[in-house]
Amino acid sequence: MKTLFLYARIGLRNIRRNVRRSLFTIAAIAFGLFSLIVFQALKVGLHQEMVNSTLGLDAATIQVHAAGFEANMALLQPIAGIERVREAMTGLGLTNFAERIKSPALLLAGRQSSSIMLTGINPEDEKAVTFIARRIIQGSYLAEADMVLLGRPLADSLGVGVGDEVILMAQGMPGRPATRKFVIGGLYQTDLPSFDRSHAYLPLPAARRFLGAEDAVTEIAVQADPEKASALAAGLQEKLGAEVYQVRSWQQTVPDLVQLIALNDATMRLLIVIVFVIVAMGISNTMTTVIFERFREFGIMHAIGAGPGGIVSLVIIESFFLGAVAIMLGGLAGIAACLYLQQYGIDLSRFVSSNQYFAAGHVLRASMTAADLLNAVLITLATAIAAGIYPAWKAANMDPVKALLHT
Image (cartoon, helix red, strand yellow):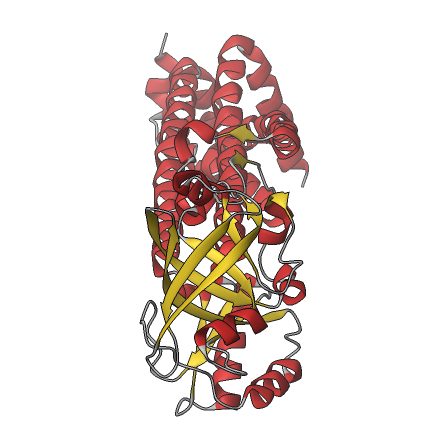
């Protein structure tokens, strides 16, 4: 223990011997840690924003359909035994869900027309699943039984507004054409114009009457913890059976989002490797330079009986101290930057205004966790120590006689 304290004192003395070089090395390590903390926090915030926007727009965490369901089919596919589905979801603690009826439709306003996805919803239930109710900019959120809710970009392209009449045409049940006039009761607007131009909403009873689908539900959207979606979907599918029902998690309904997150993770890992290889090279170069400057010192230590293990320990301890100081400085700077970015974020409007994964907002905010912070500190410290191994080995294996004669 006394030897260890002695090496620690020598290590601290040697760090102070060349303050400028030590500060340069500390700054390089601190910058690596700062970059790791901030990049990781921004990546986590990015993924959270993408998932929350996508699931809160329409997809939800879990979707339940009739077995064999395929999206965008014109033929309605009602779910059988709705009560059974409700009981199964309640049994799994899934209380935030909305029953829907969806059908492709044609919206006509005078000589203008547009293909849309018509969705019949229970307004109050849908509030717990999507954020459309919070994006009403004119009129009301399906307050009237037979009024339709349109996206503002769609209404603008058709030249209509609240209080105007439009005609909806769709294929009802069983395969019969349905046509009816509706009054526009409200307009909504998300941060994704392409969605607003292609989706319209009716109260569920009105949609059923229009489509001739009494008591029918073609989709049940469930909002839950996204990280538990796969397990919850598998449990619900097991309870309901695959013969009559199809249960899919958001990872299955939005596979492109899953792939994009995986791509971001891979890119982040590559960036971390590049940054810390550069940091490790800087530390190794610094310690190697120190070794050459202290040939005589290490020769004397060999001559008085310090073995290779002692020399290695001394150099590693110096690397540890450099890393520890850098971790304190880089960690504080990284935490401060993350707190700032968590509060104010980065406006990405110029880059994601038409991106489907940013329908809820265009501001990227950092999201830092204790686990990520600890991992960043451990990676940095391990890099600092590992970078000192080669210089330590060189010092431990030098010829004492040549070292003593070195000038």
